[in-house]
Length: 477
Image (cartoon, rainbow, N blue to C red):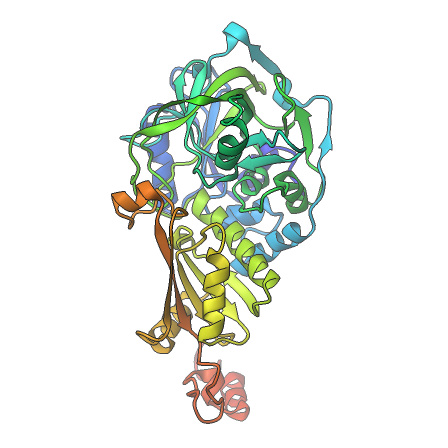
């Protein structure tokens, strides 16, 4: 089932008890962010703040849209109790079956149109999310749209944007992101401003498509349609040719100035630490704001997992890795990115392992953009979604020297990564390591590979059947 907008998704969460509507007045300055963060850490519901200090009735904030696998399952049209494997499978189905969007003349996001002197970002309840943040982040759970001036390709991404003043915002796209690359290679040389739109308050699959790792030139709008199983309606912006989701709660239209930077940050980020500092961020001059009546601003209190980012990236990055490995002929069967690993850790299950395959996995996943920096490669006898089995394989199959492979790279690191030194963050240097937790390919199954001492492996079928048939008779429930 495709949700037509964020409001339909909230209604679905209300039916399953996965959202809490807070009627009590809550301060946009830290209180809303702290409540949302606490709910994440207690595996609590999404939080809908309906009464925001300093704002008129009807203006609200939703935090934690897909902060649990339950809510991710609901967003994908599955039952809340769906297993992580089923959630991954639903995403993979949408990934492999994209649906083109359709353009419409207007939509709910056009109910209010503010231009000229009416443009005022402070009219929207942007929260001060964390103590110590550089300012109020109007874009934290968003979808940022920009366009390649030399083609029809429009790119979506999720980038943080902080209010600078009533008519400008400052953002932090990584230089290696598609946004950063477009700005650096297509607009800065020509000294032309780059049109962009910050889209806020969509149904979650649109945001999930925005932070998926797609190759250059691929359409996240097509992916969103595939995930929804129905075409996404897009509408043209008021001040540019950019197309944005018509059902969005808020759209902020602007232009990134090619020759201006402004102080941005710090911000409590997805690895669970505030590792950044005040830097020169991209400067966006806002030209128009459109929004629905009684707009709902979506936010994320990024930090220690799980939260929306950790859950969403667990799904999107894992399937992107799997698709890339398959494309290079690697015998991959499953990839799991545990939310607790905040994209730095991935478990890759392969049909035929060994050091050579582990090295191929490492090389493929680091040849372009960097994904997880710690890769565990396991055999098919290990369930990659079962951390108990993964830890056991790491402890018993990974040789302390021969099974560890390292790939160092320059200029493609992530400045937010906590374990990098300040120098590495500045220069974007880093490394990725693969732990080969598979049996060596040259080992014989009969004489070299030890027999696993588990119920299913070390006992005959006859003994297993006897035990299972009498299980309740033994007194077990």
